[in-house]
Image (tube, rainbow, N blue to C red; front, top):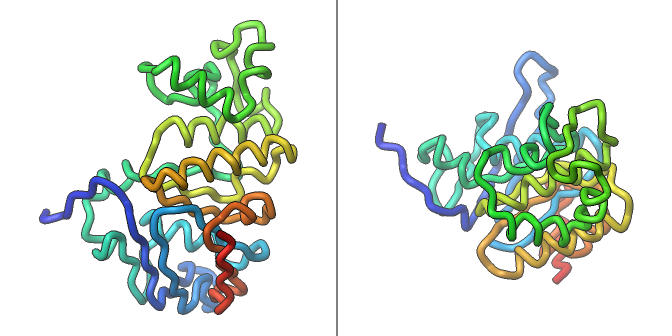
Length: 232
């Protein structure tokens, strides 16, 4: 089909992007949004319903923009092979999907496991003590009803970071965590962004996440304001 291959997501440019949800009001959810990202850690802030999540969905090719362009590595995202493009993205939602299975399976979503890598990650995120305190540790059976919202988000974050995708997209993915856990996540994300091989974009209300980002963009009623704060 002539689709382009992609090995890593290095640059993202939104140019005058507009999107209106079909069947809803005529008011666009995203209206004339433009911004540019490179490898590093960035966040989008704004009130609930301001358009943050819609921008993430457009970036992940889950919605097609009505007008404007979304470019990745200087090509329109629609030019890329869809499967390859998705393989470059790690996504963490506010409400992670917890499957009926072991904690290990919920983190890995596969049978193969690098035990040392997983152990380092659990220590980094502060999950090892909690998991080691369970009778069956990583082989403890869980489902969507057996975990708190914060515990679900911690498993979702471990799932995200184990994969080593070239672009991480987080949508309020730490909102239910206690302050210490959220700080560990912020530090873990920052370490990865500083290695220079990952682009991280967070939609968040969290000052902890925003505080370690290279840039902060504000969205209000679907419009990206001129405000762009360079934090570091």
